[in-house]
Length: 241
Length: 232
Picture 1 (spheres, helix red, strand yellow):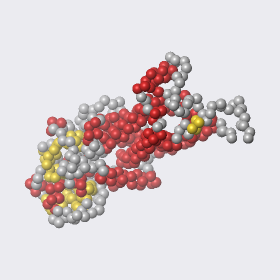
Picture 2: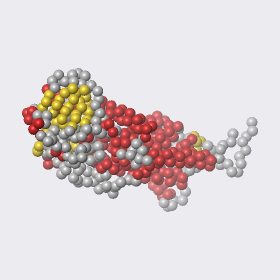
Picture 3: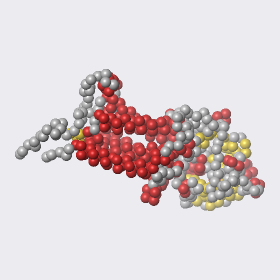
Picture 4: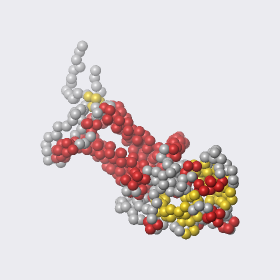
């Protein structure tokens, strides 16, 4: 039996390595999101990660760490989708509509919400971009709304809709019922500013910023998983932190 | 039976098995997956290219505000990069655990793990590389400096995964995030690990070609005809 000279094997190996590296570089060079072939697979895996995030890594009772008001960050960036900052023409006419698979649909004014149980905390905000900032929030827990509207057993999700262009989010019920998930009408001890979603926004230290719908107009209980503005474009649906 | 005739050109060194297929598979698969993790990570980094809560204070970093070249990034935009990063994390952890499982089951960890008793040998190897010592110190499958490098890079892989989880779930895994000094600190360490991986890889490839080119064949086919022992 004769052995192939080592040098030839090495050259072939080198070539293979080069081809693999070349393909990898090419993929990276295109800023590749996976294309028509791989992107659907990546989104499928993202759904698996959502499942893991929701069923294994999420605790419905674990509370996010709270901070002292003195630890607040100097600034907290705010984003909206519309060309100009979304503002209500007639703030007094604003209502939060609660509907869908509920025994008691609701139409709540800001005063109604302020008369409901109030939760306030100072927590760290995590943006999907990687920044974080500490701020205080106060508002009514979503669980208090749930108590009032009494959703059906099949209602596994809530769709939160805003008046900021077509911005919306879908939430799983467990995250919505978390004791720190609130409909916030105040920030840093003051009424919520237009930049941060006035008159009412969703807030929870268990979610990334893009999951917390600002400029709320309605929450709809449903048995099918609602999409969302960023979620439909490829951002993780669960978005838990 | 006729004996094969040895010609003058043929190497007298025996051809020996050096690397199990699990080692070879996980080695190359990790190389490819890690490249994808780094490229998608650089794209993610661009969305907020500094470390620290908004308004500061910020961690000292030479990469503050850095934009990495287009060819080095994967994903196209933040969501695309996140989906690559979180998808590739699965094979990265799977291959890592497969490799560690093999090391433990086969007992090969003994030839790889750097232990305190390897310190004198590592110093001798250092002397040899610095030309303070003429002859190569005797060694087993790996010399003590190799053991140090491979042990460190395995530890680095574990740290990459742990800091990754700390950044991924800072509320649910707050104990882990706190272990690394908080969310922004975990991002900071997660990012620095990249450059340690890159530095390791550059040195690793250089040393393969300079010191032991036959090891490339061994990592591809499993067979080795080089100047070092393949067992301790």
